[in-house]
Length: 559
Image 1: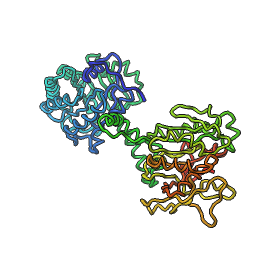
Image 2: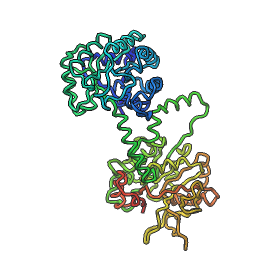
Image 3: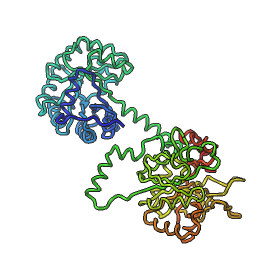
Image 4: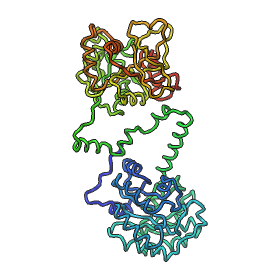
């Protein structure tokens, strides 16, 4: 993300906009229509914002015909100004009335920290210029000059800018009338002239710029002649370019696509990884500042979360690709398997991550993690690795196998469960002839989505070397994720400490030991949407899964 523009001390928003209008180099303003789009424009590197009338009315869901009142527009601008310290030039339509309305508008904009307003020489109420523009009547030139003078006389900040927008070319009045009006508006006190055209080529704009001959700052809106190289505008002496409605148009396209996908598929799993995370929305809302303030002003600190990743093995069946690295460092879709896990945890604000290495632990990348090593990994099992990390289990803790890929909702739902212990079970998995039964699970109820809201409990998990129960089919397979609430940590450790021969055993044995002492373990069912990497075939398919290319229904294997 680009760093926000550094603002020189003492440079007010109004002064910064005025400097852009009068700059010797071409400057750019980006459209925004609410607080979050204003912040996005700032983060993208823009120095100023165009408060588009079209976009603001569109986000209200009304027409660009002054159907949103000027007070509603100004209230919306206040959120934009609060969300971004950039100067905002409001698309003020015709000034929302006569000279008196303009006077009040200028005062209210100054009070809200808005840097300037652009008013157009049409009659109130206005209609968007691109809707039958040639039939729209222009304002009387002298009357419009009066509006400009009234606005300039009303401003208390000498750097507040009033930009006069000419609609004569769109209305078909010709170049002579357009230039006549522009000069009159300049003489009336306009700080810049915005020349508008609906042609797909910039011919009218370039002719006007040539005839205008630099008498004052010149602003353009190349919405229709968008294919014109920007250098053409520089050579023509244009002061500012306004990208007038592209954030609202981009967001509309995205929302239409997402809404259609969710409606047609009746699920969120196909879109979750294509859209901004909830945490990204929180970031744009400046949630971190609130969290910091919360720590100062509230006595209760936020609960911590941690994760333990069991990553000591080389990987049976993967010897051909793990000669110089452990399984968790195998490249999947351009980055190590472990990095996919770490990023998944961090997206859920789990930043305290302990990875238990063993085989070629020296090759594990340590960025963003705490690495501990099971020195006896060749002769011990998963529980011995877990024991190496238990002192780092802070707060609620997710314990994960190191060879997992999964869709983001699986982890998010897991950490939001309220039970002391929760495991993720894939109900689409059924035992296949000739494969090990390891990790298949028996549960209190099968995955029946008609029983929404009813808790399901784990009854047992098949461990390494064990067989399925005679005459009873399991309800799915444990994928290798378990969440342990902070209050249950000591019970887990007590079970681990008292279990004879634990160092040779796997995680399934620990889960069964907890059940044996009457600890309840909730089941979170999923239906695919994960992959384990246990052999070369899994490794080959992992990249497709990570890229989201594998068809749903063929990706839910652990083998």
